[in-house]
Image 1 (cartoon, rainbow, N blue to C red):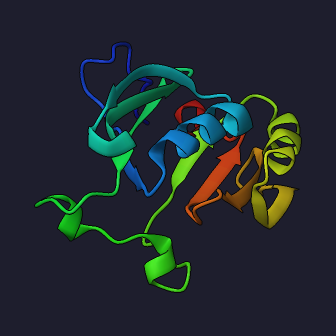
Image 2 (cartoon, helix red, strand yellow):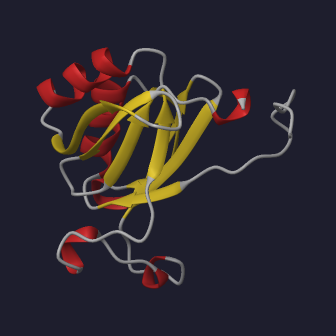
Length: 142
């Protein structure tokens, strides 16, 4: 069994892109409780780089741009809403976040439920169609 990391000197931080990154930042903070750590404006109202935290976790995001990196990625609306991966947001009270996400306009695609492996969670799409799994399962506790 692996132990919980004791420092943030190494880790995996998902990087996401949004057509309207400013709106996505507002939505993620409102719906899931993320907090803005850093938001770097880009040209023409875009976001060059942003860091949002949730507890000890972080996601980085930016606006969709035509760049060397940007051409490697596609948005869900370009593939019938399909994703090749999603982010997991671990929360203490999945029911409270479920209610908050619904109120913020999340489209719930798998309703909240107890999972057979532990925890309670749900899966939703944010306004741009990205898939998020939110739940109370703590993989570090196993």
